[in-house]
Every structure is written in structure tokens, then in C-alpha cells.
Length: 291
Image (tube, rainbow, N blue to C red):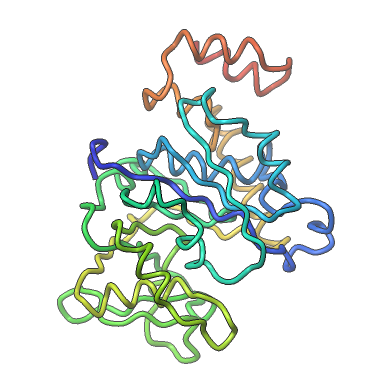
């Protein structure tokens, strides 16, 4: 996907965080730390690598103020944030029904707020995989496919079936929580029917594209890390992973200021001004070392 493609990023940061309770009794799951940064920084920087400059963040009514205080309007990172409230958790695909009509002429890259991606060349994969037509999902080989939505490939390597949390082993290719859609996704989402659990499933939206031969898939390269940080154990794993990488390499993961500079979202002058305003500490010291 080229940078000329008009695209909005969407971060789904709503939900009740019940898998994290009592950690989430008074705070959004996506504001919990992954090592040295709020969880929400990681999906935002992933969208920045994908080329998004305008990002819609979907949150619950009780947490949207916290996101506004943390993120501001996004201009400090060369972004524009929109904050949308999802009153009740009615499924991932419901987020497309919440997008303002003024943005519905654009393609969309949706990422789940508790999904973590890292790997060599990931930015290039995120930017160049989607043509802007139809939909695109990624595929990632896992040992426990029954815990995820999976994609089944035919003998030619094309997607032939999508199954949500299969009971038997039909594929080891899980679908990570980042998806690309053309502008038709908004209308298609409105036509979806709730599943047996009463939600609008993202797999059903993907199936609507698959049934019309308009779904593409991209296998994530070997060496790419994808983690779902939505449970206490997986949150700890993600934090440990980031800590090891950062301490070994001396580089930070999920740092929006750094991504904004390197991806050309802000220039060096704006970056310097931004760093000067940060409080003294390890985070500021790291950013000063980039100047």
C-alpha cells in the first residue's frame, strides 16, 4: 500500500477487560503498561508504520477522558485523533458502524488495542500489503489455533474458509488482530447479523469479502512477533519481551515520538521541541539520544 492511499487507522480500545479483572476495575486494559509504555502506544505506532495519519480511537464512556488526557489531539506526533464512544461491547465489527460519515470514503486499517506486533521489516509489510481494494487479513502460524479465528488455504494458497475458534484442527493459521478494508466495509458492517453470542463478528465481515473473492491474505514473515496482551499472563509475556529487546539492543519499541520522526510525520525541529517539554527521566533521555 502506498502512502498516497487515503486511509484511516482505527484502534479498538473498548470492552470491559473482564479477562484482566481486578486490574481493570478502575482503569482501561489498554492503559496498563507493557514494560515502560502504556499498552495503547503499541497499536498506535503499528498504525503509524502502516501509514495512518488520522486515527479513530474507540473507547468506553468511562475511559475516553483518560485517553484524551494521555494522547491529546495527536498533533504532537503529526497525527489527528478522533475519539469515539462505544456504549456496549457488541463485537469488533461494530466499530465500523460508529465511524463518522465524513471518514467513510476512506479505506480503514483496524487494529485491536491489546495486540502487539514487532519484527524486522514489519513496517514495509504493513505499508505495502494492501492494494486498497477488497479486504486483507494476516495469517500467523500458531500451536493453539482453537483459541483464534483461523484462515484455511486451498491448494493454490488462496483463502478458502474462515472459522472462528475451530473445535477440531482445520488450520494452524491464526488471524492476528489487524485488518485492512476498502470503503465498502462500513455498509457491509451495517448489514451483519449478530452471532450466537450476540456480537457482530469480524470473521463474518471477512467472510462477506471472501464470498465475493475480495479477501486477500498475507502470511507474516518468520521472525515476526505477534502477541495478544489481553490476559495477565500474556501481558507479562509482552512486557518481558519488550524489556529483553530494549535492554539488549538499546532501542525502544512502540515509541510514538521516535516513529513520528523516522517516518516523517514530524520534522527534527518539532521533535526537539516535543522532547524538551517531556519530564526528566529515562524516556526523555532515550529520545534526546536520537537528536
